Image 1 (tube, one colour):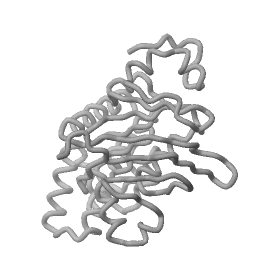
Image 2 (cartoon, helix red, strand yellow; image 1 turned 180 degrees about the vertical axis):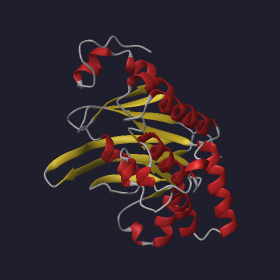
Image 3 (cartoon, helix red, strand yellow; image 1 turned 90 degrees about the horizontal axis):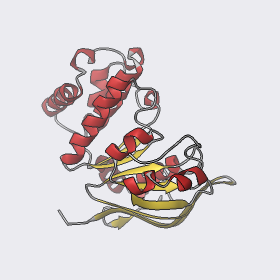
Image 4 (tube, helix red, strand yellow; image 1 turned 45 degrees about the vertical axis):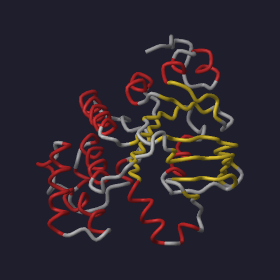
Length: 255
């Protein structure tokens, strides 16, 4: 492993949906093994950034480099390039229902490994290992749409972990979860990070940001980056957080 290896690098990236700006002149990088939080008010550009990092959208201007090479929409026309990239990235959507589509949880977890040609026995082992890790062994024969919100979140994460990605990208991972499931998820993410996974998390839950990240990137409402600094430094800057409309007057800052 290369020390301080940049696995993502965005230079002067801009993106818009028709005439609606989402990202403006974004300069941003991620070092392998980091845990980074993406913060900002609704509509500031956080999810669009995650989509670019996940290969689900591409800069309309500027450049995006990942794992040592530039990624563009054209480069993804090469199935080998697209497949290699997506095997390294695990994107967990805010809405778990957007990720779950198979008739049973067992099939859901097995789907990705089967698509990349993994042998049946290895797939069965992956399903078993991931289900045990997430404590969902008794749910494997249930239909995902019959699961609770917390169970669906675990199911979505299990399906991603079955491919053993290098990077986990999570959009509001604790939304709608009860405190017990939230704590389970945070502890799992920290364990995965200690095992070498890179974590990039978008969240409004400032009580968890200091656990989920050592570094925070704060978006302004004008779709630019207002600050990129150690998490503790950003959370303690109450005037900045209020200016970008992330907190109200009751917020007192700190950890």
